[in-house]
Image (cartoon, rainbow, N blue to C red; front, side, top):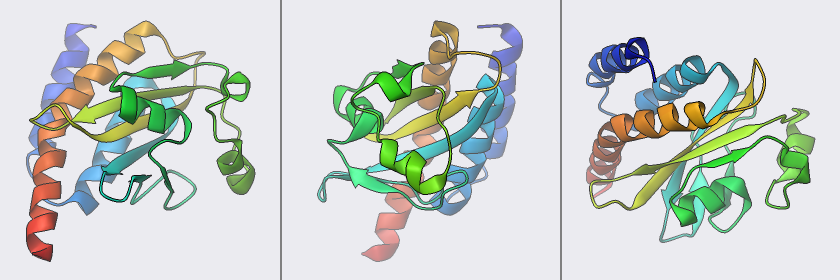
Length: 167
C-alpha cells in the first residue's frame, strides 16, 4: 500500500471524527471505500446478532437490504471474520443471485471485509461491487482490511450512541 493511500485514509479520519450517528457515518464510509478501490458500489451491512440478520440502512442503488447472517458471501464474511474476494460471483454457490435479479444490477466481482468492534466481534461488513478496472486484488483486500479497522471505532461508537437513545 502506498504512502499516499495511508495519507488519504488519515485525512478521511478527520472527516469521520465529526460524525456521531450511523445515518451520516455509513454513506460517508461507503463513498470513501468506493473511491479507495475504484468500485462501482458499496454497501455496509451491520450485524444484528440477537435477530440473526445483517442489514443495511443504505445500499447503493437498491435501498435497504436485510439477509440472514448465514446467507451469502456477506454472511460468510461476518461468520468467518475473514475477507472474501470473489471475482466470479455467479459461479459461487454463496452468491445471492436474487438480489441482482430484483435490482437489475449485474455483479461482476465482490470484495467483502469484516468490521470488528473493540472486543474483536464482527459488527459489520463492507461489501464492494464491480471494480472498474478488472478484478479485486490481494492489494485491494489489504487496503480495505486496513480501512475497515480504521473506521471500526466510529461505527462502534455510533451504534452505542444509537442504542443509548433507545434505552
